[in-house]
Image (tube, rainbow, N blue to C red; front, side, top):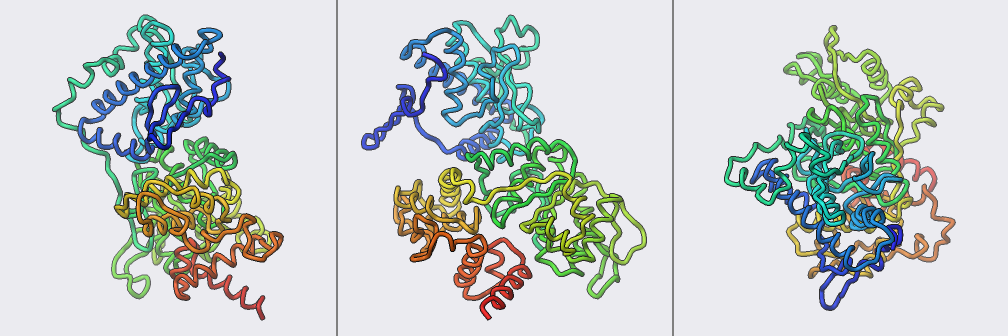
Length: 545
């Protein structure tokens, strides 16, 4: 038996009638990653970071040892090296990690590198960026597995971690003798009595959950994945190669303080990726401030970005700092930057070049210290070529560009994302909905999702609100999703007629219908500015005439 021969279809056995799931012959349960993240947060609040680490490390050790026992007793291995290498692959199949190509075991001289870790992701989501590695359970799992597989005590230590801002997670496994004095600070967490020193002790204060936001939709947070209060974070799901490439690039450039342009259709998740970049950067402890350039008039946008002096215009009753200053030490996201008026574009360019801003009504400049991210659903290259957007500002913003694929180009992500959104909606609405029926999932897979992740999130909430029991059925989905034809087109319409422009037009008209013709509400649902919606409706009207 070789590690490469492991097959999830042979390892996983589900008895649907009996309600029993077995993995590698051992009874298992399937848990939501977000729920485990919440458990981690509660452990930190109850027992402090050290106590939480002790609990999760010991849990991991037991899980890893049981998995190795199943591998040793049930399968004939070609060699010990194959048995050792099977551990990382098993935990990849279980959804814990994604191993770097070529790496097989933390016992190797170079250790093992993880390109993604569910544990680091959940720590960032619930507790923010850490000062030390946080993949405690994964280190325990690897330690328990290797100890059982080799027959001697092995301790796996994480020395790099995405959860503290590193680009990858890295683990090294050695025996106690090989570690020497370097193991001393980690050893207590692996012992069965590891909890004793921390139980009953005062807990460490929780990290700050939020920095106060500003007016007009500007949001600030010290947490990389935190949404505004009352709004659940949309999960970043990346099963598809295109989305994996985008997130990999985001994580790689996050530690570098370069300006980044995020491009993609409305609802594709640009702000979520911006928060990921902020959380993985050296500025994670600072504020994350976002402003929608399409939602504010030119005069007000200038004041919002750069601030104003008292008396500079009617209603300016006091001095006010702008968002560039509010984002000091953190990150400023210029959302829908392609909609910024020409006058504001010129001042944005000067602020980016000089790293200074001048408040409206003042003659003095003030230094700014904020990383700038920009996002747009427009083709800024074409706009710059046509003179609709400043070419020099375009190149200043596009130091690094990350394109987020629309949902129709990442079909592998639809169901995993829908399931994650279902859990979040069920908790938010306090509904006992735990799953989709196969018929509902079929409709979700067939739908074209012109509104991307935002449309999917709305459809899932619709289903959770209408579901009668523990499952969201086909009839609980919105009409347009429930009636989606396998071709992705409307009834009687040829697939060739289902163009990108046609998809956009149908999404806009459907949103207007849902909101009784209210353009402001339709624009908010679609994630575009009211001015953008008005311009598109005028174009449709001209085309009809």
